[in-house]
Image (cartoon, rainbow, N blue to C red):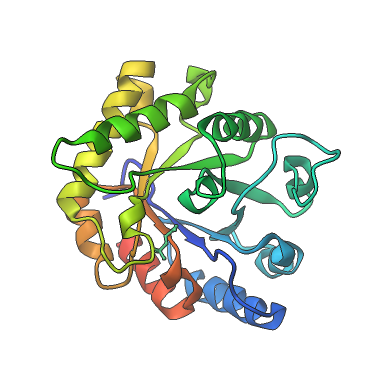
Length: 255
Ligand code: PGA
């Protein structure tokens, strides 16, 4: 039976690998491993320095699309160290990760996240918007925290464009720590995010938004997170720079 929402698996390579030769090998292995897998969308987000090379490798692959880990909202100009959305078009980039906690940690605010989302939507590039709390507390303040992040992210986003946003719930305590959210945690958060979006935009469009989970996802925990967490896919960090493990996760999402 076909799934109503096609799962999405995104590999966030972060600041890896060390050499272009290694990036080439990783991209090739992932492309090859995905060649026969269907019913799942796959995105890899290498460091921007490798975009041109990885773009050439992926060329012609419908299965693996290109993403980036950050972008500036302006088209061009005096923004040292930044890259723009029109530049990404040169490399057929179709996804951009926005508001990752590692960037928020460096000072990216909700307002900047929102500006980037609006610019990405305008440019026709799908924003993968990261939200997630630093820690869990007994009084459930983490829910309020995530709610604020989502409401701020959606400011000025028209209903007609909402379904082009992907939300990645990434609790900071789970990123790179080996401490994964339980499937119940992930499920609770997906329902909670859908409720906020329903409140803002109505149920019909809210239900079209993909909600991914990220934070120490690997080939061992992917299956239970998907089946019991009822999430729409993954944002994978560490395990995405190991082609074999990443492909296993993709196969689980496709199954
Ligand atoms: P991780 O990172 O899979 O290494 O925990 C996920 C992320 O930060 O996107």
